[in-house]
Every structure is written in C-alpha cells, then in structure tokens.
Image 1 (spheres, helix red, strand yellow):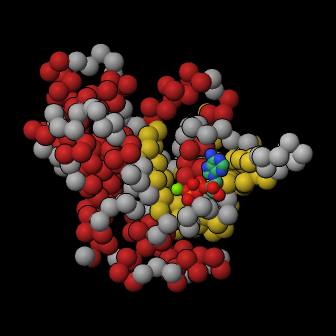
Image 2: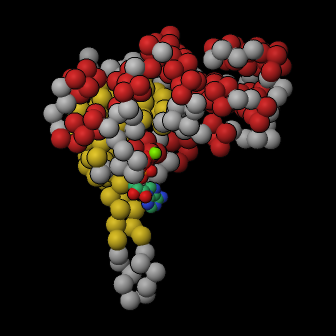
Amino acid sequence: MGVPYLEIENLHTHFSQGTGSIFAPSQHVVRAVNGVSFSLEKGEILGLVGESGCGKSTLSRTIMQLTPSTSGAVILEGENLSLLSAAEVRKRRLDFQMIFQDPYASLNPRMTIFSTLAEAARQRRPGLKGDALVERVETLMATVGLDANVMRKYPHEFSGGQRQRIAIARALAPEPKLIIADEPVSALDVSIQSQILNLITSLQKDLGLTMIFISHDLGVVHYIADRIAVMYQGQIVESSTADQVFHEPQADYTKRLLASIPRLATAPAHR
Ligand SMILES: Nc1ncnc2c1ncn2[C@@H]1O[C@H](COP(=O)(O)OP(=O)(O)O)[C@@H](O)[C@H]1O
Ligand SMILES: [Mg+2]
C-alpha cells in the first residue's frame, strides 16, 4: 500500500490561557489535542467521535493547518505540512476542505450561491469563466441534489438542509482529495440528517474521497465510517474498525459513550 494518504504523528495542540494577573503570568494550559497519532489510507472514512470539548474541532483545525500545532506532525502524501511556508499551505489546502456544523455561519450571506461556488471552483482553476464557469456551478449543484435554477439566490432563502448541501458543494468545488466534516449534521433537523448523511456517503464513494467524519454521536459515526477513533480529553482512547468499536468496545469511555446513545439515533439508515 506504500505511504498512507494522511499520517498524524504524536500531534499536540495546547492553548495557554492567561490568568489575567501580572503576578501569575504563566498559567493554565488547555491540552486540546494531547498526543494524537493515526493514519488514513486513500478512500477511507475515519469516524472521529467524542463528547463536546474533547478536542475534535481543534484536531481538525490543526490537521488543516488553520491552528498551529504545539508539536508533532501532519504528513499528507509523505509531505510534512508543518514545514511548508504559508503560501505553500494555501496551495496545498485546496486538496483538503472542511464541512462545518453550521452551514449558515460558514456561507457568506451577501453572496449568491453562484458567486460562492464560482469563487471556490476558481481557486483550483483560475481560468474558468463565462459559460464554462456556469456549467461547472450547475454540475456542482446537481452533484449535491440542488436545482440549477436557484443559483442566483442567497443563503437565507434556503432551508438548513439545502444550505448544508450548498456548503458541501462549496467544499467539493476546489476538487479536494480529503474532506474533514466536523459535525455536519448535528445542527440539522433529525428528519434531514439521514438525507445529508446519505449524500455525504455517496459523494465519498463516487469521488473516491478520503474523509474524516466527526460527530459526538457514535451511532452516526458507525453508520458512515470504515474505522472509528474515539477521542477523550485530547487523546485517542480507542481506534479500530467501525463494527469492532460499536459492537465490542474495549475502552471504558467508549462503553459509556455507547450507553449514552439514544436508541433511535443508532440507525439513521433505516428511518
Ligand atoms: N482558540 C482556543 N483557545 C483556547 N482554548 C480553546 C480554543 N479552541 C478550543 N479550546 C479549548 O480546547 C478544548 C477542545 O475544544 P474543541 O476542539 O472545540 O472540542 P470539540 O470540537 O470536541 O467540542 C476545549 O476545552 C476548548 O475550550
Ligand atoms: Mg467541535
């Protein structure tokens, strides 16, 4: 198999918080990511699960080079991203995109869907314009199940589920290879969640994307992922195949997490 697509090596991201006192300047350190290692093969979906505050978003932002790591390495296709210049990271970042929990906050309210998707598509292909650009936007919209005739509308004119489809189309526009989806269905109505989960899974398969799918809900992660990593207080406490973690959890924390799943949420596929 050769080099894994993505390798995370003993990654730490710490935040130091001032006490506000000049007499005690060196203070409290939040170890949001505290020694995380894992690797990801091309085309694989890793589910990252853990309760709120355990460090999932910080880990994803650190992988994306949006938050600097304190130590450790993020190696993408054999290249250590922490050693790249800011300009090189910007270029490389086209290969990895994020989908966030709140599509409303992540879309620019003053930009039409067309402008949003056109801008994202042109990051990869600056030469795209005119009819070719419109065609590209139409294709992106069709890919996420949106009708092209709504492309001149603004985010507020859509429902939460449609907005998440737009955010997914925007993430796909620069033709990424890796997607980090950070709680992409947590803010949506339960009735919409399985539609969006199904969309994400089919896109992942069709486009051969490598994906890190984050959720606080082990049921959702089990539904979507090949492997699951369970995160607790900045560390991975268990990591195995999705079925192994879901049906035969080893770590006490995973057992507690499993016990806390509301029964209905464990089987989004069957509703
Ligand atoms: N920019 C920041 N500065 C200081 N502390 C932060 C910052 N971002 C996150 N944290 C802290 O790091 C911990 C992990 O947060 P986060 O990564 O958002 O967890 P999760 O996504 O799992 O809910 C929390 O204690 C949070 O308060
Ligand atoms: Mg988070």
